[in-house]
Image 1: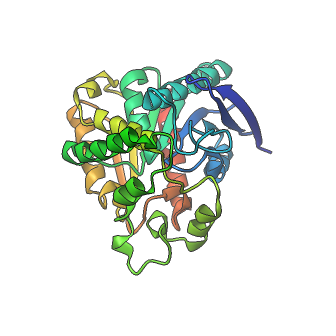
Image 2 (image 1 turned 180 degrees about the vertical axis):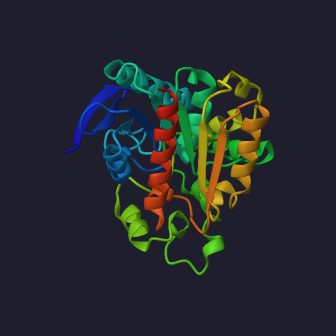
Image 3 (image 1 turned 90 degrees about the vertical axis):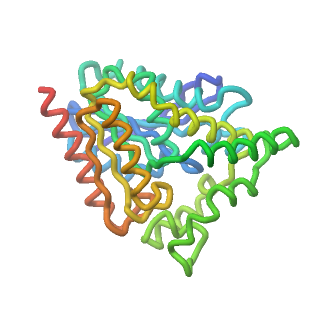
Length: 309
């Protein structure tokens, strides 16, 4: 029987964060830390965690600042340095977990917004990781981000820093459903599985708009990724798996994901693996082909861990 431990730890911003640890039977052969996406929470990864547990892999993760029942304001990270707190909280949980499993190969898996945070994290703390998985990532130009930051800054100046901002939400994500018209819901772009889309919509801790400050921090974080020099800090031998649906608008239907993979390769990373799933949309772990995706993630982790001896 696998076991789930629920715990709370303190963010570097001082807020309490909900954490989870899913344990396999016996000593784990690897540990994976999950970094969830925007406007969701860590408990949505239970199915993935259970699958990895059956392969002898322990899984941990936490619900970000501004997310889940611990959030004082949904969609608001903190008044200062919100994106950096996300990065630092990942590291705090990693240190806590590695202390419990010393010497066990340690992986990180980031989805969507979590993939962008993870890409920043790898630039600061890539040393010592066995491997990384980026799911549902993408590329954003400086021109687009400049416009997005101007809008978010204006909202904050007008008193909306701590208030939900549906206007920016519509501007940022309003076009995501266009490839799937006529759409049944505003979140059809997440998955071809209608039951999973409905479950997302019914979850009170999913799908909420960020505050003006939350969007500003998101766009600032994405802006960091336009500077390619810090990619040189990532260990060149780090195995990296990038997975995305080729019908995911966040990844520009696969083209943005390919561009990010090229950036990693041009920075000298020698083990960049990219897999695009035909017809799959944004949430691969809730897609109709999720069993195959989970197997591919487990196979990558097992293969890398085995090569480490």
